[in-house]
Length: 255
Image (cartoon, rainbow, N blue to C red; front, side, top):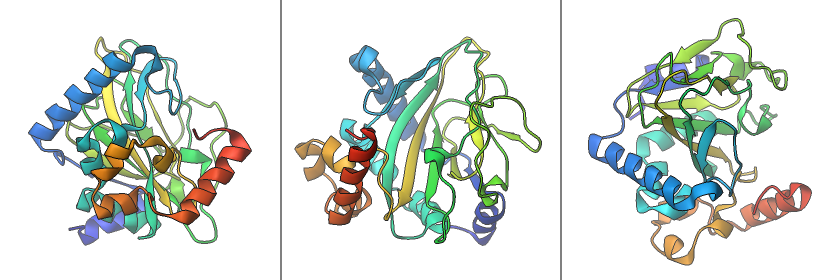
């Protein structure tokens, strides 16, 4: 399913835009579900991961609706992810982020998980699912193409403009696959409407998950997973259990 030109863009630029990837019915269901969750969870929304000033967050979404397990295991998305980090990969987390209206703050430049490519190559890859149009005014993601090859991190806390940065805009239903070693960050929302997105984040199997799926998912959620989804979430992976346990002891980050 992945064309040679798409593979080349992922390799050279570090990202790939898939316009209109999400069918209209699925897009409507995703919008309805995240809004229902924000209302249900209230001030606790996003607590499995982290809170963020100027934005609403949700985390552990695979446990909160069958549509989310379907989303993270869609074949073309997985083909893109595997092209970047290899076939031995797993879901690290599935979160939602909605920048608040009239939020004048941009995210600092960062790479996901503070990841620098190692001797085996790249080990993190993200996908951004646009639930609303991403525009110049409403907080679209900016990135620096080819920065995934630099093997260094941006200056901590820097929110200013950088040479070579590009803004990735698109209509709702677009998905952006991003080599998450690339420098990127959300921009300020200067409109009177929120800007919503999902972030399905994947990592290589020899690295711990950002959110330890096996511990977070309810038994009824696990029971409904397909064999492929169980593999993707590392439900039966003993090595993943060891990695996640070690990560929890070191940082207290995973719950």
